[in-house]
Length: 113
Length: 112
Image (cartoon, one colour):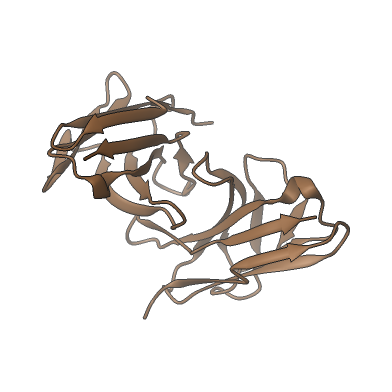
């Protein structure tokens, strides 16, 4: 089955700096890659996703890049703000009849004011 | 408003009790999932269902069981709770037309 590795496990940045979180996946059949943000005591919420037919996707300060050949994808947050502090999870899944998301272990991002 | 609802939100029970965690969604989704998560930690898939009368065990071995008699309802049952079951349980659902998976607010379970 699919295996998703996520790094780093913790990341601390100064407000205004950029943050990058990286994930690798093992199953070349995976074609959907979402990122979830989970604030303390809250449910995970989708912040951005990318499909395998696209190399990059951007939404304001957040961007995701995908390298299918190397089987890795990354989350980029620019101009970080204290409210970006949360745990971020990457995930991967196949299309077709397999709708299970395989999650990475999460990255605790702390943005220091 | 379309959403995923979980009850109870918090539960403290004694060892050996039987409990059922409720999950309902008004999203019209056919796929539903149960995850176990210690606060801020890894999400472990324990059960999933792709439709009525369809249930599968997830990646994490669990002593719980699930049922899917109605599309919108996916309850999880622990026949005999133990302190090792203390955790947060998150229900999720996903439609067919769009890949986005939505999570419920979670049930925080403490077994004494």
